[in-house]
Image 1 (cartoon, one colour):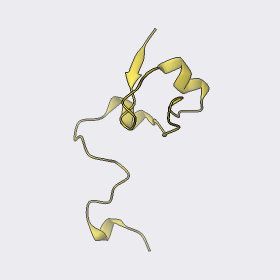
Image 2 (cartoon, rainbow, N blue to C red; image 1 turned 90 degrees about the vertical axis):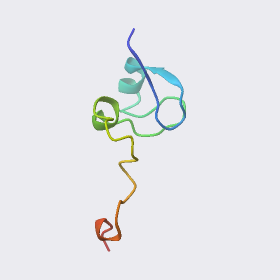
Image 3 (cartoon, rainbow, N blue to C red; image 1 turned 30 degrees about the vertical axis):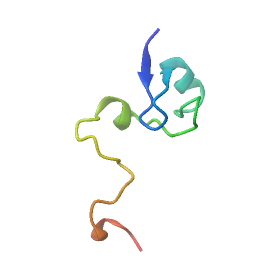
Length: 57
């Protein structure tokens, strides 16, 4: 079975469990979108604005 590590709670979870939980970590409930799973090249938090201009009012 294929597993992955949740970037938020650091738990190893089965990909099938993530799929069954509608794309969320079964341990902590964090959203595990494809970009977090397969494209984690910069190591930054994709939900964190990098500059004040990135935040919509």
